[in-house]
Length: 138
Image 1 (cartoon, rainbow, N blue to C red):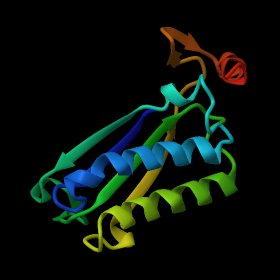
Image 2 (image 1 turned 135 degrees about the horizontal axis):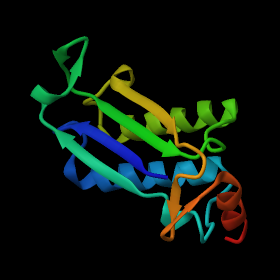
Image 3 (image 1 turned 180 degrees about the vertical axis):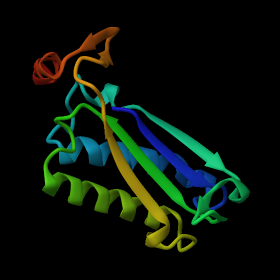
């Protein structure tokens, strides 16, 4: 499940950036009941992007912000309680590590569901059913 964390440069100190990624990754696993799952844990990947303020916008104007996007199969982040609790945790994680430099209203999140059968894990494109079977082994 790729997680993309995009931050305006300077809002999260460099020593805290990896902590943001780690805690968001852990929260995703925990909210799906997969904490410690040997199959899923290494397959929740992340990319951290740092952008200069003149390249991050709200309403077409430069702004300091954070954007977190999760790409997952359709069965992940499908439950409303999981959505609310996970994205609340994500917001609080970024807010905490921004150390007062970023209001919560400047932390945006979203999720994109992939087409069934296109999820690649261990070099194989898997359907939701195949992925669920693999996860159950972990």
